[in-house]
Structures are given as C-alpha cells and as structure tokens.
Figure 1: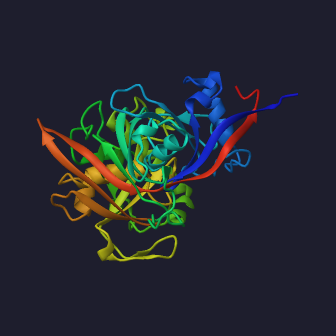
Figure 2: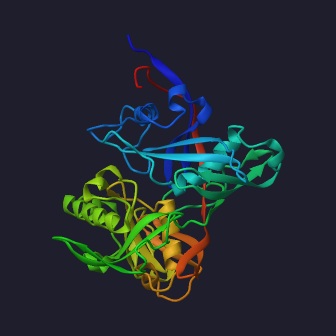
Length: 390
C-alpha cells in the first residue's frame, strides 16, 4: 500500500497572495533539481490538476492568488543573501509555470528566509530593518526586502493596511531593482503604443512592456468596459474570459514571448493583460468607496485566465514603470506628464507604486520600482504527499 511522505513546509501570506514555501534543502532529493519530479511534487502539494477546479485535496485555494509555491535557498551569487524560485501551479491542468515572478510573495521571501535560518544572524539587527537581498531566479533580477525586526525576530503584526487583505500587519518595503527585461528593450516592440490586431475581436492601442512581468495594457473604453469592473463582472462571463485570453495570446506573439498562438496555452502566467481607465468613482469588493480624487487611474488585470481580486505585485511594478514613461496607455490614463509614482484603483481598493524611468541610446529603463506589502506565517510544519507522487 502507498504511504505518505512528509516534507517540511511553511504556508505564508505575502501581499494579496498565499503560497507554500520550501527550503530547497528540505525537498526530497529528486525534487531538489528542476524537472518532472519537482513539478509533480508541487502540483500534488497544492492539489492539481483538479478537474473540479477546487483543489480540495491540497493546499491550494482554487485561485491564481493561492495556487503558488516558493523554493528558497542560500545564494552563491555575489551581493545576494538568498535565491528565490517561484512556481505558479495551474489549477485544472498538469503544469507548473516557471516563466515569471510573484511580486506579492516576494514580500514573504525575506521573512521566510530569516525565520528559516537562511540569513546569517550577524546581518540581522536586534531592532530595526533587516535588508534582505534576494536573487529572483525565474527572471534573474534583484529584489531588496526591508523586513522590520523586533527583539531579534521578524515583526509580522502591525497597523499597515493593504487593500485586498482583511487584517493589518507590519509594512515591508520591497524594491525591484532594474525591473525591465534583461533580454531586450523594456518595450519589446520598440514602441510605446502598438496597434494590436486580434482577428474577429478588433484592433487595440496597446502598451506592451517587459518590466516586473511582461504585461499588455489596453484602454478599457476600447474594449467596451468602464474600468470599474469587479471580479464577477468578468469572471462570470465565458465570452469575456475567452476574449481576454485571445487578446493575450496575440499580444504574447507580438512581444516575441511565443512563436505560435498555440504556445500561449502552456504559458498562462505570462504575459499578463490589463485594462486601464481614467479615475472614476466606484465601490470596491469590500464596499469601500473609491473616489475620483483618491487615484490617478484605474487598473484591472487578468491572472491565469481570471480577473485578479486586487493586483499582482509584478503587474503593479509594470504599472509603475509604464506610468513613468510619457506617452504610454498607462501614462495617458493617469493624466500624462512625467511621473515618479501613481496611486491606482483596483477591484479591492487602491495601491501606490513608484518608479523613475530614463532613456539612453533610444531605450527606456527603470532603476528600481518600489511598493509596500506585508507578510505573515499562517502555518508551519510538514505537508504530506503520496510516496508515489514522483
């Protein structure tokens, strides 16, 4: 009879996401290297693939925000403390997408590393901010997390409120260093705005950016939307979901992320697609009134085929970077002009992000993008999976 094996793990919230965190050295030997065994383990941990799309037999929460896994290890890369690898697990399909980062869970990586003893004690203040330098292995970028410490331990509780998270916690500042793509221009087509032609749907003015995470931005009005939509307005419509996925696939092709439209189905995590609007009054999903004067623009983003309940952290970086460049769809929605930060409205409330762009030799870049998040350990111990999982 097949028995279960135990794997040390920590279940954490980071920003508006949750995931299962592992120390690389705690994984079964077969899963300590990339490949089928690792993917099978992570899928079984969260309960995928699940044709019911509920992940009842696993740790996942049946949304893109809660079907996530993180592997952390000490870093051998100069100037970094830890390596952070993110796996976005599909819910109803058998694959793990390693093509991008999770900005929300980035806020939990530093606290996890400290709690797990992966950071040397001589680098940690008894009280104050611990600066944890993280190598994000998926996208090969540096993230700096400033983690509050009290009495030699991570301060998890506090009075910082983050829209999309019910309870307050301690604030963690997260800096994404040089967040634009390492493989080419921040704007992969070379244009701030492109005509994105999608057969049988339409042609849209789109800003396609590779910063934080590859993202396609379209003005809501061109889609026939207001920009104030909440989750059910989109997720309750198969027509809208299919339309957004079709537009996303054509955008991915134009950005050079895939070689054929069919490949988009195996790359669900990237690129993201988002629609933007000038400020409007609306009521958030928690019944919080958002007024025109509260925000610079409105943004709604799709994640793993569904409208996100708040905003992905990496997409927030993309918003900050696009808003800082005069003439993008995002910048125009925010009122135009040179900007070093914006406050945008999303389905759960508002978020402030900052970035400063510069142009050199015809190419745009951003030195760093900054936002505040929070994180908390929810449970720690072991997860169990059948011994024949891999």
